[in-house]
Image (cartoon, rainbow, N blue to C red; front, side, top):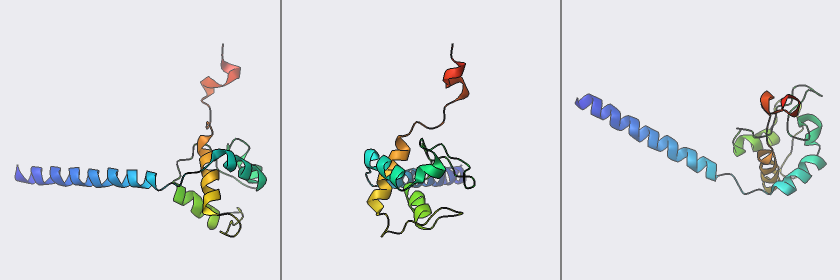
Length: 124
């Protein structure tokens, strides 16, 4: 019984640390302005590969969907600073962290992909 109690205490402690860490990570996202983010997204050309609605595309190779991205802000910023594949580099001189936060706020505000049943063509 004592071993079970110790394991249960350890599991509850680990869950508390993990959940507390998750909320801390969520709070690390700087406040962004989605209106300014949309303007930047369009003016710097993000839409050329990722689509106007952040839906992703295949113009220059597979560009992931950004609408309602599950990528944390730090990963999003890291991809802009040191991109994988053919994406251009956005140094801090080219785009500030606040501007990245604005773009992140914009893509998080997008509705994301529709379920097939919710597409207008299939509605009664």
